[in-house]
Amino acid sequence: ETGVTQSPTHLIKTRGQQVTLRCSSQSGHNTVSWYQQALGQGPQFIFQYYREEENGRGNFPPRFSGLQFPNYSSELNVNALELDDSALYLCASSLYGQGTYNEQFFGPGTRLTVL
Amino acid sequence: AQSVSQHNHHVILSEAASLELGCNYSYGGTVNLFWYVQYPGQHLQLLLKYFSGDPLVKGIKGFEAEFIKSKFSFNLRKPSVQWSDTAEYFCAVNAQYTDKLIFGTGTRLQVFP
Image (cartoon, rainbow over all chains, first blue to last red; front, side, top):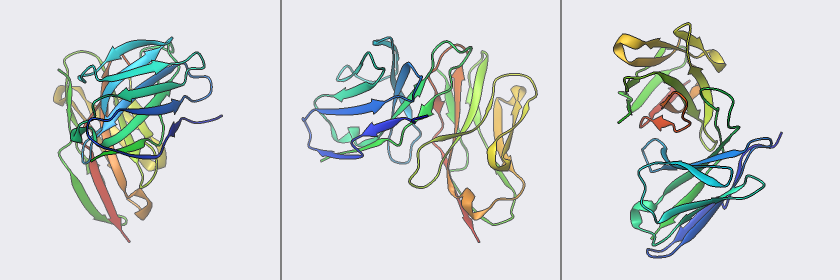
């Protein structure tokens, strides 16, 4: 069973630039959620994708957007980067429809630094 | 809005000491409760979870947690910690039938031999 993988591991960008982060879900999973973990904080829910559509969103501006592909992998795009976007971005996959909660399995994260 | 509070930001213990990490949540409805652990350089892993039933739940590596509904609490415990328990611990909650996890700010545990 292949776990959740993310790429790249680290990324450095400057303010105003755009960035794309990638996530491959665990084998057999059809749902991907993205979280932002700032330094010293817990992860914060950005959004979730199921069946290639956004299925719930946290308190993040529209410049945070995503995609899910037919193979269930996903991208997180952030436009007009700001210094506060510096964080660890976590991807979690799950199998939708298992019951009251679909357990999420987390990837190792992408560390984004905005200068 | 749902929120999770972890009262201990940094805990330092010697091996064999007992551990209790506090977690309180604010949500009036039915919730699922979780403790996740993040070992240095590794990804978030589920330590234990509570959905319903026995309020005392046991997880991996000797950890357990007790759900006290009247106190909106879900404290994590371990009778005797080991050096390998050094990690960041996160309490999380989600409303039933949603997958959105709300995390606390985390507790950094350092265990010295």
